[in-house]
Image (cartoon, rainbow, N blue to C red; front, side, top):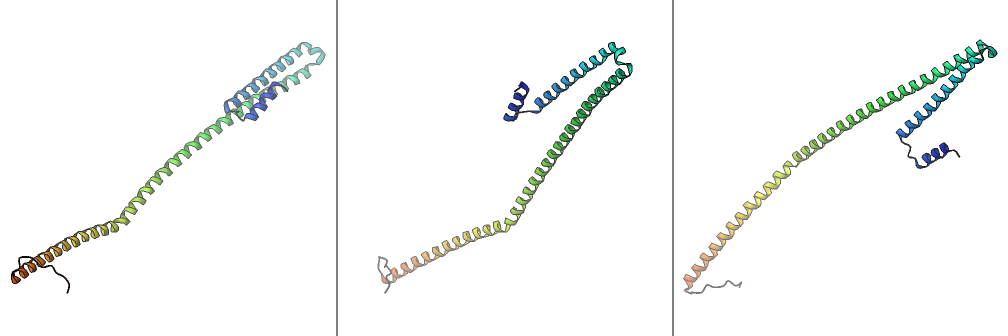
Length: 178
């Protein structure tokens, strides 16, 4: 195998061919073609020395065809480069539009999340008010219970003191069920 084939197979096997390597390879191939065309041009010009044997018409046709091939090669390269530039510009433009679209989508998503959070907060307002009212009700109930227990304790104390005064006993009686 030739060195070029080995390099190609290794690049295919590893899959590590990058854009810069491809560009370098294309430039190398273009330089090879340019050198070959220059060599061909020199050979065509050297045929002028043998013009008498070959004939002016044949040499003129060969030179015209050579110039045609040379101009087509240059035109192809220029066209290819302009197409690649156009593709690069298109890719950059699309990347910019995609990035802008993603940024806008992110902003819309953040706004939607904020709106949803506000909506949930507003919907929970009756629950918060209800919980606050329940808490206040517990405080009122507890204070009323404490007051009721206090009144009951005072009444029991007053009853005991009356019973003690009526019976003349110094000890308070314990209440046992009869």
